[in-house]
Image (tube, rainbow, N blue to C red; front, top):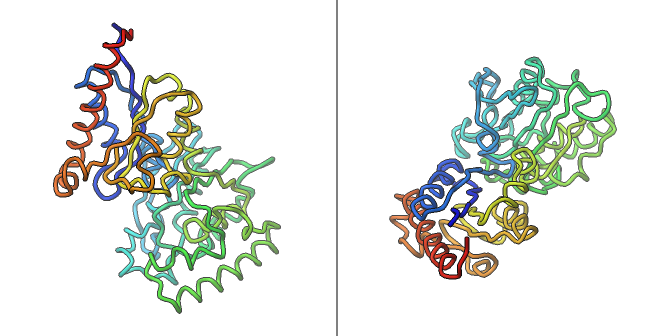
Length: 345
């Protein structure tokens, strides 16, 4: 009897495990159950995108969100560069929301990182824009990269893709994300006014109305600022899935296992779990979701396991990888038994 093949294509479990670690735990459970497993950790344009696309292989010193130097990791694979804006202008670099200066935080280091990639010979640059400390409308990055425009389209030296996981518009960025970055009500109002001014400025200078582009508010408007210079905005899951050949991998699998820390309605709105499930549906490939927790309203949307429900809250948080491995082992063991009982080959 031939061995069955599972594809492990999970997102990270925020705060407890990376997508790579989750995929490895899925593979361990699958192999215990007698299945072969291919690992394809995923991301949606937020944190983890660099890791999903191969991980960093170089670093560059750039301006951090507060203007102080930071060492930012990134990847150059042939002529394709992969950058996570959070390595240059992330909220964690700023010390979290409590320590972040929401008005002053800058994306200048992101522009410096893109410039370093271009100087190193990159002709394609993929930028994941999750986890930012900034709401500067991308002005810091624009000031660095203005002389290198266009960042996409005919005649460009490089094609820049901004992989985002939200549809927030440019001038909405402060109201939607500002409080998460330490901005109080008065600061949110100031930041919104600044974004509105920048929208008009970008339109006058570059002929692009960033205010109407879905996702232009990602990373506090960095996505919009880069779009003003010609970069292409792309749903993050789609961008990552295309790069790693996810659709083909799903079609070749007997079963796909994905997962994330919390499965809720947003999981099916441009996120990894919903994207993987949609691809699996297109090829009639069974899918199974391993989640730290599953909200009741989505429990029936796809076959899934809620680790907190099965293993308890304390163990599922303390030993998430062991719980993932055990849950996968149990599920695949039962499937393999049913497969053999029905004469599968």
